[in-house]
Length: 114
Ligand code: SF4
Ligand code: SF4
Image (cartoon, rainbow, N blue to C red):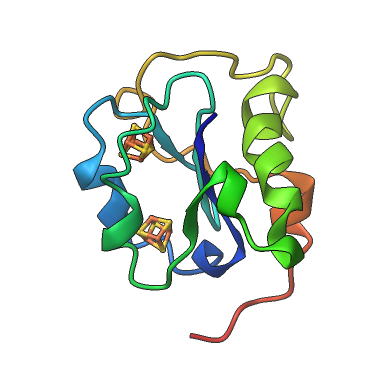
């Protein structure tokens, strides 16, 4: 099980959750952040600090955003645009910094009004 970042993060990316994560498993794409499902320890520290309530325990992701559970996983398991290899398990987001790319799902969203 894992926590999941869903649609409301798109085009917000304020990184408030990153500061709370004790294992540095929240990775920054271009328009959203993604939680590594195997590196997350399910501590729940990130969930209450999100200003737009984008973070859910995977059992609790609202149905309309159910696709984001697999999509967070895809960010690591599939090769992203411009990369030959999947990210796999980097073991920490800080050393990578903003990756500048998103999954197809997130990249396909129209700009989100804030
Ligand atoms: S639940 Fe804990 S370990 Fe998982 S992403 Fe949130 S802060 Fe990090
Ligand atoms: S706190 Fe919420 S909106 Fe901010 S980067 Fe994290 S998931 Fe996205």
